[in-house]
Image (cartoon, rainbow, N blue to C red):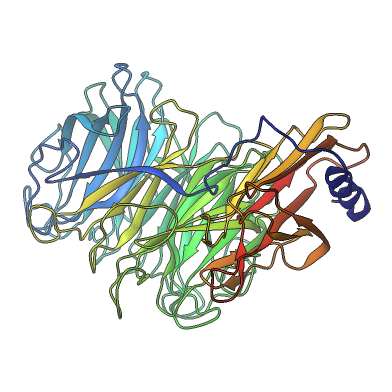
Length: 570
């Protein structure tokens, strides 16, 4: 945003009388409004699940297969023993708008019409991706990874393309591996092809979507640097052609080190950069930026042939990410495209850090999910952490639940306008050891063009709450209001045009480095509010961050923080 225009807007705001109506407080964008659990003992799942089934290992949302108004969620359980030990299984769950299970269908070596051979330890269901209606029969189809399949050699991996019937059973299937399905790429032993899968959309304009497949133990360039295969599919699920992306292939010029595990997760981003070609997010959860095994995400801008035109990286040290990652958090273990949470026209992401230790002492692996608001260049505008102690998540996470091992977008499950997301915790012990669970989270979005970034700290009258109103278009009414300050308190308002967040006694100052500051006084009820006509000349997509420091003698350090408020002009 042009600094003079925006600061003029704020100064005009301060010169007008109190705004008395039309303002509302917002939950921090990306935080949890409600949560529902699906497990052996919760959410209406009949199952049954057995010990060590690890339900929640993989996740994908299919839409409404049967046309009954419910949305189907596919859940992998790689430890399931149908047919053979740890051959794996997939559960298709029909979800009600409240997040409970209305119906279920299991797909395994012995159930659901799946006719392909599964061997012991294949781990069918490790990854899942919706394929849309690949064969044109009016029912959505599903890609399922089996990363320990031995076609062509030990643990080379495979992907099964399942053509589903309306009742969730398998009408027919195609296998893609080193020896099947038309795949012409070279797979080595222990590549683990199929560990991750994601639908990319139509790269080449042939009307059929492409599939990204991770093989994170691929050794191109060095041991376990990892790789992603882009598969151009035929309508029958076979591979027409493939393109490998790795340290030595596909035009990728990012720096990968040994053991980075590039390809640990994959997610289609849609057309992030507006060039007409879908883009791709790739997790490398053992990347060492900032410390050992903290993890990273790569944002790949693709060409129509599946090669990489350019890239960006999100980690502890790059891409605008300012969240706190610890050693071995494994950020990037999972990744999912959430849709546009903040209404800025850019797709946003969720990324899992399943070894995060929030909620308990030591190395407890409860896990965490990061909600990332992206800019069009793939960098992070804002992040919100969801864990046992942050982001409004009210569920109970136990040590080694590994929350956010997997995640998948649910869209708006209950029709309330808020984005929902499914999060796997595959070692949850509801009903028995490591039976697994899935959490369904409703996330707070933005009332565009205003978005709360959180960060406030409690004081004598609650946490000071900052809210905004108005469309921020030239000539329209715009306003700011603050509540829950001590009566007559001094207020220091900071205005920033970028954010380098800093911790502050349990909160976060987002309005740093501040460009302007203004001094006000709260009224007798502990409130402050002003409105004005928004000035002309502020460019579209400009951003400003507002945050108040509030004098409060009841706290040890004498100051509380309001939440930060992000304003984005349309």
